[in-house]
Length: 386
Ligand code: NDP
Ligand code: MG
Image (cartoon, rainbow, N blue to C red; front, side, top):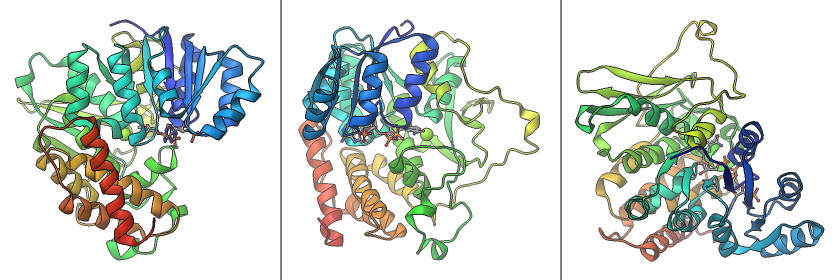
């Protein structure tokens, strides 16, 4: 594997996408394809700056508008999921950075794998729902999936000191605890969307920020770790670390623990996914440990933040259960952001969807998509909102 030179960025208008472009500026990578959902304004700016050979918007109307606006450029404008998949397969790209939010990223990830691109993966829902389908396809095509998620990048970096797989005892994911750390279920009953969107340490897209507040994000990351590092769910532990300085740890059989630290800035994991196995200076501030008088660690409150164990249960059950948990959460998260359900209902709905969902051990893309659709429908029907 060698450093990225030409990049296709899926979800380029989002929090990770824009930070990835910043890394490209600093490293001098060529951007050959860009995609978003409907943000015409920002994608136009990015097209004018990066001059990619193609760009896509999922939304057809927005794509037509973009096409008009950039008709003076050489960029080919595509639309729909097929347009995004085409950008994912762009001939000139050596690497695809997938920073689409949600399950919508699954088919573009598979398309990139089948085109033998190196994958820098921020879109965790892809691995959670696609699970074995994604890892098996990557194996089959000899493609590496490099984690962008900060915890998984940390583990990936820690694992570089490992000699043999048998030496690894456990993976320890750190969690910030989100804006509601220390609160009781009673206190969480009536929290508002605005309160849930106030993350203490990271500035991220709305969906993942709500997932951090419910700690569903950590549940999804547990499943992501199982697939990325081929470990058992019971070997993944979670610890709340309020400062988000220790990004995750691994424990060896001799009880030696290795951690990766840094200031909370996604440009470190983004850059490392693109430069691996090499390292280069980054625009990120240096970590000065003496600025912190303490680094704190706590056991998660599993009773109040139920989503973590709902995800653990889903991956232990295996099959399509993680796809069901993810699909139900995407819908419940959306309904909460729209002010249509309460905060605590998110976990209740995800749990009910997992308990009522149908699974099978051997699954293909159509099974994953169906499980996702049914889980969303289950949530919509449960609350009577379509
Ligand atoms: P944002 O909401 O900020 O950005 C999402 C991007 O995906 C935008 O470009 C958006 O386009 C595009 N998009 C939205 N819906 C669709 C769709 N249906 N089909 C195709 N593209 C779509 O999200 P984040 O950048 O915060 O997160 C992206 C991914 O990275 C998520 O999976 C998240 O879990 C993961 N991640 C994020 C971190 C962060 O710090 N933000 C940290 C670790 C992981 P448009 O602008 O047009 O809506
Ligand atoms: Mg993370």
